[in-house]
Image (cartoon, rainbow, N blue to C red; front, side, top):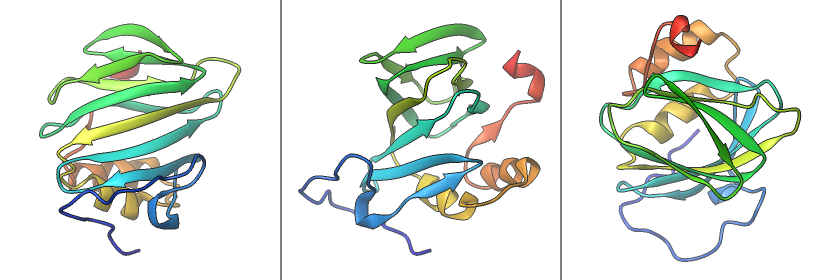
Length: 154
């Protein structure tokens, strides 16, 4: 897949349920849609079915935000469990361990954005359709996303 990287933000609308440039990613069963892609920021929509999650990890070089649009997400944020509901904004400063989990019985949808983009789009390109979690962790570490040991998710 080719990169959508851009240095300037392009005006326009990325419609609901679609990705910028028609792109989407399947990352361990969750569908991600890029919404805005520049070197300074990267926004993407996630769609998480009940039971889906992203384990606790750290972005050492990026601040991250999550705007929950539908449903509820349980987050492990710096060692503490918190709950974010539709309309809530989660702030994740760089270097803070975090993971998100859909522990409800309903789908959840959220808009994530990171600043700066760093290597995140390239990471998602490489993770698309991978099915081996160990390979996802290995590739992520090469792209400045460091997963913590499984017990961090307890």
